[in-house]
View: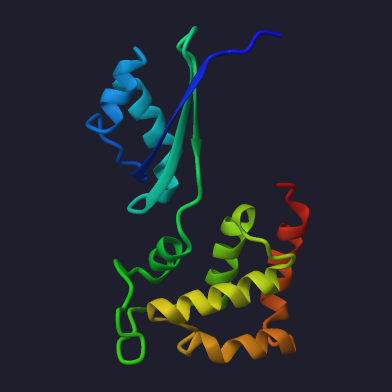
Amino acid sequence: MKNVPTKTIKIMVEGGNAKPAPPLAPALSQLKLNVGEVVKKINEATAQFKGMSVPVSVEVDTNTKKYTVSVGIPTTTALLLKEAGANEPSGDTAHKKIGNVSIESIAKVALMKKPSMTCKSVKSAVKSLLGSAHEIGITVDGRDPKEMVKEVDEGKFDEVLNKYEEKWNGETQ
């Protein structure tokens, strides 16, 4: 089998809002691709991450001009901020809280981040995300997330987390 010459363009875009402008447009034009068409495909593929920065790769077969758009996962901070309805981290987490999320929201983010996490279970992923929530000034169920880590270990949230554990274990990634 002959090697297919491919070129990969990696870029961060706002979910559902990529623009046919630099640095994307020149890179696509150079490869003789229809910039508007590729941008439309990127926006469709990233629509679920509206308002968040999302890593995107466009892999192009330079012979046939066929391409595939691959969407990465937004950062943990971006996902937590979206869940909390906040725009940016607190900057002063001891005195300024920027939002509140439920333990269920934390589990949902854990599931989204699974491909990039090394955790073996939803519980361990949730504990990691509770630390992240604390660091950016988000409370969980109206409380300091750091206080909840022990309760996760004690099984206090098992009823909520178990349904995510099934999805965690059932997904092949």
